[in-house]
Image 1: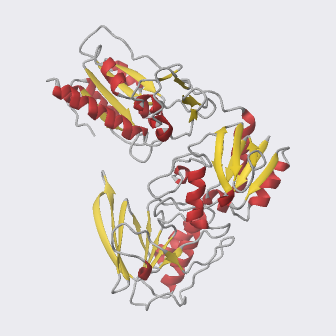
Image 2: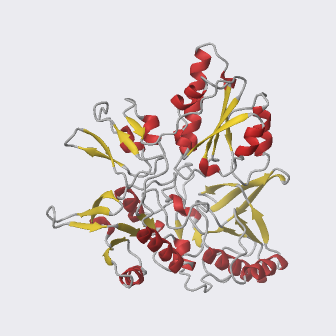
Image 3: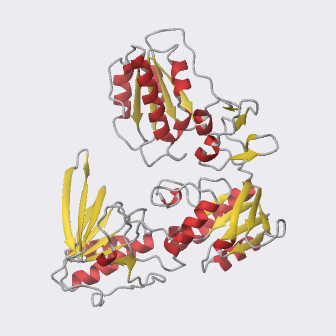
Length: 492
């Protein structure tokens, strides 16, 4: 098997050696700008390079490993950064620019209370983690250690994080020591940062709380803000994501940086990313994960089958090509229609729901359950929510229909269900938790579209409801019981 490694990273030699020892042929592209495109699918990728004749400037690979990091960071540059307020504009859209970075190598402290970039002791020191994406454990340990050092100097220290991590060796002891020294810990849900150019300081507005915890809002003003991440992924990383046709979030980060996704996975089958937390703490674990997928033949067709395109109906509009989060659609210039790369398709059905010519279907598309009995409700749920108890639904005299992704819940699916059921509830993943990249938002949009159509026809839109749920959310069964009992619920 051939593996292609893309990125400028000091771990490239180690990654090459890892796969070479397992009988694979490894090729490295360290100059990411030499990459023109990556076509094909898992088991048959072709990377085309710039500055070479066709054929001589290409590399064939079975799978791809990306080592390039957001912000252009190389191995070791994983620590907290000092954000300089003079580099931030207040127009509301400019990214925070970080400066004064010190490298973190094997857990050494890279920032001291005597650093010349700090303002006098009257200013609080703020450590911000999980900003833009989740921080790795290495940055957590570094930030806690530095927070302790500042607190020992009698500085007022705030430690802001979206997640509390205690699994690392000695981390709990660091938390305890920091608390005893007076470090203020704030677990936030939302954060807004604004900069004052004249005063050269930041105003940090954090909010949090929830059911049972109460709500809180807190403002901190300081010149000393140290953040683990910023909203600028860097030109090189953005270039790699674009050329590999990978789905990114609104900040340009790959979705595997989100904590709830499996390590190293990207939106494209056979393309893996060694994210910074893997590099810092679990490099061998990440490589083992990639290797196991490469040799296990896990690239089988999804349970619902792959997308099937009717060339006679296809109008070559490229809507499916642009929308597919898995880069599974490609133009077939000989047939003048789109084609599906079966080994890349995840069977999510997003392309089928968007095709204006209805030219795309899934080979094993699940039929909507037909039931001649009236006064019953249908619950269409995304399998990835992991929150639906089908026995509970049946006991409440309802029917359940699983789909592989919320993106499969479209107007046609819902309208067909209304033929046999009085009410339909669509259960999808919460926002920013969809494994198939905003399939839940597509389901909401499709449902609201049908609600508008029903209202225009003089039919109550209360027949359709949406519930965003996950296995960790309490009260899901209670909401379903109310819905199955015939009461109205607010849609999303």
